[in-house]
Image 1: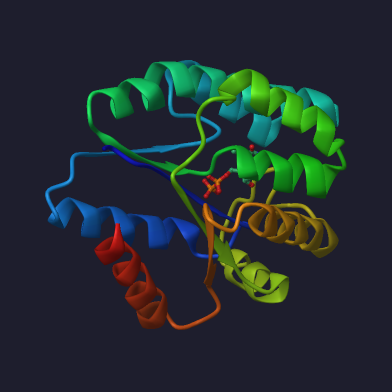
Image 2: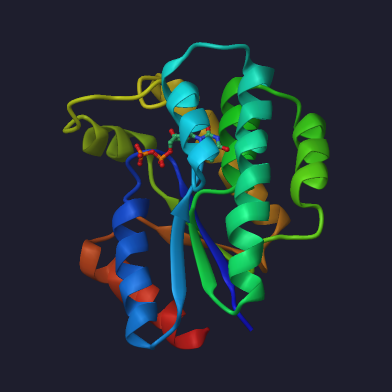
Length: 200
Ligand code: TYD
């Protein structure tokens, strides 16, 4: 059965590099695979991404737009792919809303749970890889980027809250969320990812 796998972590954790490497390893096993991202993944979702990453707004508007983009993504991309037997890897999904909008911004978790229930009550990732890293290290990595979006411009304190909310989420779903210690060397992270690929 096709699997739905998501990648999560604070900005600068190395999640995107890990994702590319993981996707290549799956393709080498001849797995039919679709790689997508949030916010985004559909033409409308990409337009919402542009707004979300650049435009200041109320924190609940932000939460609802994240889930609005997700609604499109689930119906138009993720579910059809899984139904035809294509595996899906998404660079972020609802755990990011709990971490950033819930932990970082302070939107009540109960409200996010309602949105989650509404948008994909019957669909959860089969596996989530959470790239966890001390915030100082993540920020050091981000400092090489020339242009930072609205989230990346936030202070260390914001990211500390995002990180903690991700870790709480991982504790709540220990069977789904696997923590990758991303401050380790790239070869150690790759070894861990390749063990995971071999086991699924
Ligand atoms: P990301 O794809 O990590 O950005 P980049 O292209 O820089 O690698 O994600 C974009 C930002 O969106 C990221 O800072 C986290 C934020 N985000 C939320 O706040 N809530 C969400 O639900 C999602 C999916 C992303």
